[in-house]
Length: 230
Length: 230
Image (cartoon, rainbow over all chains, first blue to last red; front, side, top):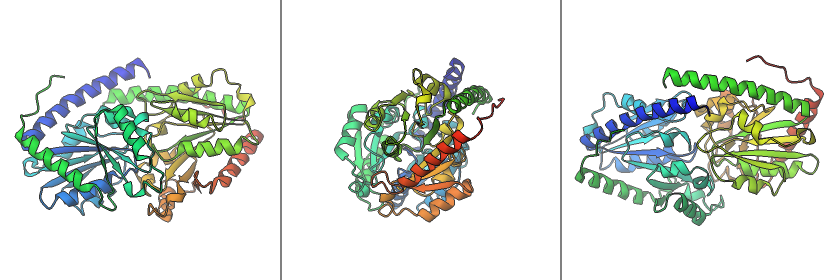
């Protein structure tokens, strides 16, 4: 890559980081717990998010922003689980950025929410460089994608907090080697918490709900996010 | 995105296109048929390519370049099917470009080959903007990824020549709607040729072998690739 494009990109990322820090502070002040979702296309982010919104909506006030290059299909689908869903279409851009999040939030009263989920564009490369101000980032890996993805895309695992192995109902027919997948995640991100779920059967989802509930309590009891000078 | 980054990217792409045109001419002069493979991470590019190399190696001289951010695993795996395999590791870059291809070919006698396959980094966005000088580009979509990917990532389908639906052995358990997938491909790229395969069972692979044989005969009988002024 040319030196010039590297320099321009670094500048854009610095601006993004400043805005992401401001968003993180705003989320904290509003008492909303913000969780980002990243993964390959087709690894089941939307099905997983549908289950999350449906399961949490009984006890909490939930909302979601969903990113795609094109179509409003995901937002339409998720609105069945919660009315507070907005689509962000990025055109040809392979990731969301903090400015897109800020714009998409316009008019929403964040202090009326408990959880806000941000589903990124399906991509294992681009989203890793763009902080969106989330409190937690989940990286999803489906049982049908193969066990080697953490080794091939280490940065996205390193820039995430929790790994979710999805489509576990297909693990056996897809010859998925769960132990190898766990080993590969552990080798690129030692100590990373890993959940195994199936949005189709609902298996494992209770553990994720518990993590989110604990996170909400923890973040409301903790000190504000520090103001970072970038 | 800033105007500046758009301008810099346009310049980089123009340089890439010039180099890709030179590569295309060189491939034509050498009589080698070059096929690119693009898809999401985990949609089965390497398993498909392994079958292609294994099946074609009986009658043809074959080689492959494989792109990944990290690891040399794919090249090691493919070398079981053909000794002429080289890995390109891109670091944090989400696609191959023409310069990477030119460098990776150093020392290879292209006129001793019939087919050269180029497996791109697993990504449905970035590779669509970078011509690698291929004669044909295959876009792969696995039955476990969902039918909506052509609608969500139209550009990668528009910049490809042939669609390959992989993992057809899992179509039933994954509730894959083949008719919807075909309709979605047709809507973003009318008339696109579509193949359904399973690298695991080998089903549908004969049709792809036939396409490649026909392509080789056709390209050796046709006129040289035109010199395009970019």
